[in-house]
Picture 1 (cartoon, rainbow, N blue to C red):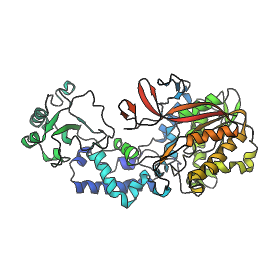
Picture 2 (tube, rainbow, N blue to C red):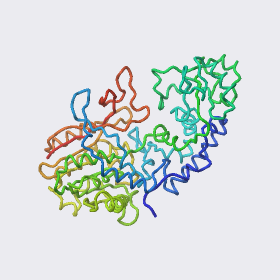
Picture 3 (cartoon, helix red, strand yellow):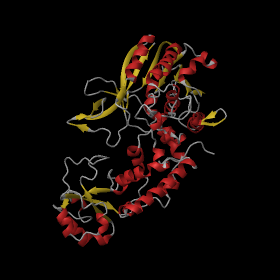
Picture 4 (tube, rainbow, N blue to C red):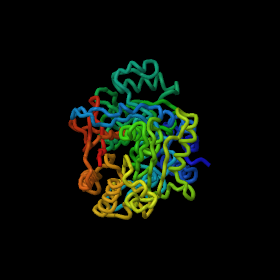
Length: 517
């Protein structure tokens, strides 16, 4: 049995994966029934086949991605923030290594908390599995699939769009466009259109086309009443709407909802746990682990294996002993064999043998334990004062409830002050004591908002480090992956608290504190 999932063929090939026009032309009740069936299919594939609602790579594609990771030159990841002029920003746009996610199908089952009460957190899985969330699921699905808020399947008809000449009507007004379509283009059975109330999703921006410099065709309510528009094209209209102008959204017939529509679950249904990018991790190792020597690194929170894969992929002019721990027992496959061991074995057997290099030069040791307790582990004592690099992205208090294990730090320390003193301090103290003199700590962490309060995880981490005796070297700015609607700009300024500017574009960032003993 493979210890990772592959392409989600069950969902992609299932009858529930209908075309966009099928959903568009459904009645409200028919659409609700489709949602109920979709939820059943997804829960089955997730719980029985261990495949979350993602496309997934096949095994040969995972191998190919890992091989590419080894060949990537990461030296150019550090770039200048145009707002400050400082070259202190890590800008990674590569995805190589992300296939490690497929060893961890519970990632999207991780509840995300927005309050101090962890039990209120929800995961993407909850929206499929919990009956009380069915109505919410239908609302979200209607917005994203039936009304295509991400513009995945349809686009508004443009003013005098000569690029579609002889494929679709070309016109300078919506009334004439529809007349042309119904007279000359409908019987071709290649495209269709639907009438979109412009303000229907005003409160939700979704993916949103950049329409600032484009002119789209519209029709008025009177136009719609006069034109011979089939009812199926008006399925999303509400005649009680106050709007007088409607867009004409054009789509190609035959587009299946998935795989493209799978993005909606990760973007809008619920925030989801993310992995540390392996390419960035590779850059950290190659920056702080000297050439032509053996380095010992400790990852106090192994998470979803992104940093492990980054360690395995470093250049052959370095040798790494990767020490890691994580208390998440969901990762145990059998006895003392975990998902991390499965990742290591898969990588060394498929990439290091027959890959760019033959010798598996990097090793791994793992403990199923929280980082605050590693200081008491007998086997860990032999590395005290010998570690070259401590590198991790620890839990952000209770923001992501990785599992229900009592050993999870947010369970052991349910109040922030208790967590700061019992988990954060003890972990950083261990990092300081176990590092050799001149060794580095790379600590990716971010403040979080719970209820109305912003918890100062960054400043508290920095203060603890300085009190312990660390020297603060630099704080890198890690650019986060762009998400639909995630980089909104209001009055010329991004809405996010922390951002940089690269090539005139804004990017949301998280800090990575770099400390030296």
